[in-house]
Length: 92
Image (tube, rainbow, N blue to C red; front, side, top):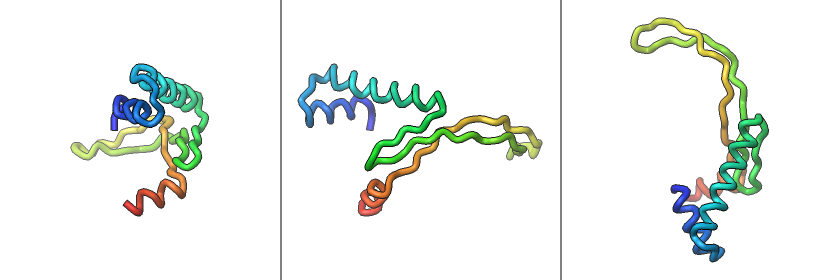
């Protein structure tokens, strides 16, 4: 599903004009990106939690050449679904 498709769903369900629906989607995603970039988590009840994790430096290996290299420390975003969301997905 794309941002445009999300805004279409908002248009259908709420009745906002398509341009405003797209703006709502953009504002939500921009807010989430800003919060996550600060290292904070985003919890959406009934859906899940987006977390920022710190990964430490480690040694890795180039699978093609076998040469060992150091992988630098970094921050990654992970998603942990809520129990309700997991149950819904499992039902199919």
